Length: 293
Image (cartoon, rainbow, N blue to C red; front, side):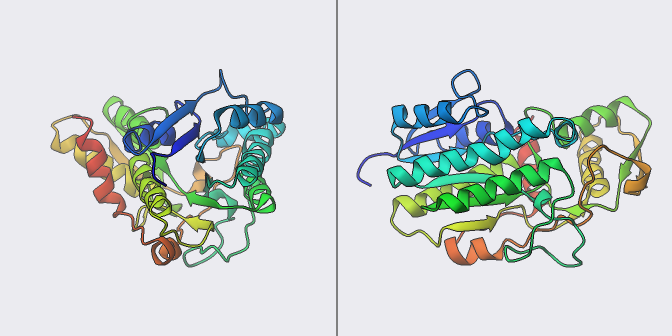
């Protein structure tokens, strides 16, 4: 492509969208559309906007991500996470342009002993995972050039997430009980955005890998308890108060939506096909926190 690509980003204020806006700002012309311009519960609104913008690439960074809340509003979750990605994919296929979409470890039930790969059969435990899986299926049905990037345990310095919640609670309380039997890879939104940039550069330079579904998380693994420990260690180093942490099983912290116990995603296929690798989760956490100071 001789000119900078015109990139439509759905979602404006979410963690991944904000990271994308920073990472891609010099890569092309960004058209970032939030809820006031793009109603993801209305398919015709999506079609009209895409046809008006005429992008060279579409990135869907919007989603219904309130996992527990989704249990009580399944129709809205399905509209945003399931139907709208398919509409974007159909419009992208009609234009002959790529479509990038983010999915989740919640499409799996967490019962596997080893790491989940793209060939494993999904089996969501709740509405959120089911709605995200429906989105994946709708995108595949539309065909065309698409990347579905499954990630996990996303955090950043904006919005509501585990990192910011822990930083607050660790300084407010003397003791905190944190789930220790759910395993995964905390993934900084900045890592997702940087990897997305590299994927776009491969496409722009006409050296893409195969289109399809891929896993994209930080490397390494830990538990929510281990993640909290790492956050606490940095607070202590900064001379700030830090609560004592107690590991507990998931059964001691019931939630409306079940969480997968094993959320470890094998990202080697993305590395082989596209040459894109991700940093260790702890290194990425330190890089994220360095931007907070």
